[in-house]
Picture: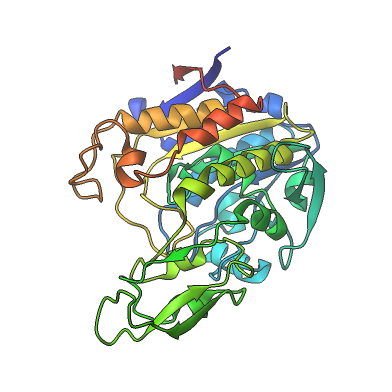
Length: 381
């Protein structure tokens, strides 16, 4: 059975502003039915890493907050802390970064709450009894909220292929321990032909999982002065991906064939856990604007790969993500982006950037678990 996905393009017909159009989209998507009157409503957002500029602009989040309040809910903006070293690893740095990126109360009209607390340990254990996850560790502010509204910046992602409603809910709604569980077993490998032994990956690793060793005589080396090489201890690695972000030589990678499907399945299972008890009190909104080729967790944003498209909304996270992928792939690639010379860019933008990532698996598995339907009806606002 297909689900309805509402879509608003970016045309300003009759001089209607985009914030006003977003408000109209939320009404058409029946946000009011998802909000418990008088209940706390988590508006799950990514506040953006410091230096990143691709996250959803706060002025576009305000209509969501206003709509939740008008529906009788008590909205708060929330996200959980990161595993990697950056500007959102604890609540103090996270909130300072959010305000720096424009998410101040006078702008967004709601308080900011770091979902898993001061140091990532405020969590609720949620029993799901699924294939890879028996008990999920969900950030407490997400688990305890009466209603859930996902506001996701739809973009590409170097591990899941793309990030939308499912990733914003499953990964973004997990505590630090929950994130570690999802990434478990994803220790990166080092490309000896690229690693220069600079130590940047070692210095950023919060878990002491990377060290520098003298390079063996037979090991490939990028230059004569590259006498050292990074070595990853898989017993200490939590798979957070921070070293992939940090390496200036792009010498770190993960074992794609082995790890990615399991990672996606765990992420989907965590989305099930985050929504448990409020399956009928949730809405998912994807912003298909400034669609960057990598996650907003980077301290920078690369050029968007396609023109801005619009905003999708649905009570079905699988349908809204599938529709967002289809809208992305229907666009012509921007020649100023990393897709400039990509042969597959006309049909599958995700595979054109990440040819080895089976991105469809997160949607297939989510549908298999009953999280939603890949079949949808797109209704233009």
